Length: 223
Image 1 (spheres, rainbow, N blue to C red):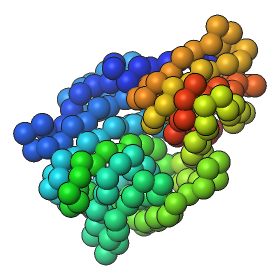
Image 2 (image 1 turned 90 degrees about the vertical axis):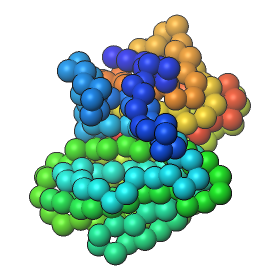
Image 3 (image 1 turned 90 degrees about the horizontal axis):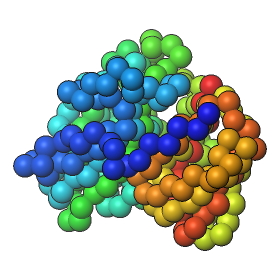
Image 4 (image 1 turned 30 degrees about the horizontal axis):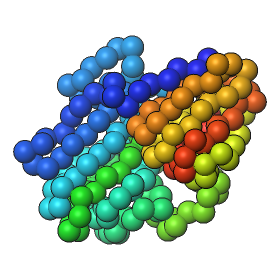
C-alpha cells in the first residue's frame, strides 16, 4: 500500500507573530485528526521555520525519540542534561527523551532557519534521556534509532538517479527538496512527489525512486 500525503495538506501551526511557522504531517495539538495519528513508530513529522531570534524556550518531552534534520540555517540546541550544540545542514540530531527530558531550540543566527523534525514512539518508554549529534552524515549512511526499532536513510540523488527503497514492513519517505517519481509494483503509474510531500508505504517491495532533479530525502525504515 502506498499512501501519498501532499505538503500542501499539512496542518498549519506555530506562532507567526513570534516568528514560528510549523506544518504538521500528523495529528498534533489542536489539530486533532483521529484518522491521522501515526504511521508505525512515527507520531510526528513537522516542518519548522524560525525567524532570526525566534525559537522554543525550554519545554518537556517524554517517551519520544526526536530526530532533527536542518534544511537551512543553524539550530541552537540546549537541554537540562547540559548538552548544547549548533546543528547545521547535513547533521543529524537525536534526543531520546526517555522517562523525561527538557530542552530548548532557537535560531540564534542571522538567517532564517528551516528544519524537519520527526518524533518516534520508543519500544520501551522508560530509561534515561540521551543526546547524540552526528556531523555531516554521508549520503546513504544509515542512522539507527534502536529505541524505536527504526533506521533513517538520508539520500541525495542527482537528476536521473535511481534509489531503491528499503524492503521493510513500513517505509516513511519525506521529500526535503527536489522532485521525484516513485516506481514499482505498488505504484504502476508512478507517483510524483515534490518538496514537503511524503509517502507512507506498507508491505511493498521492489520500489525505487527516480529523481527528476537533485533531491534530498529522508527515508525511514520502520518495523
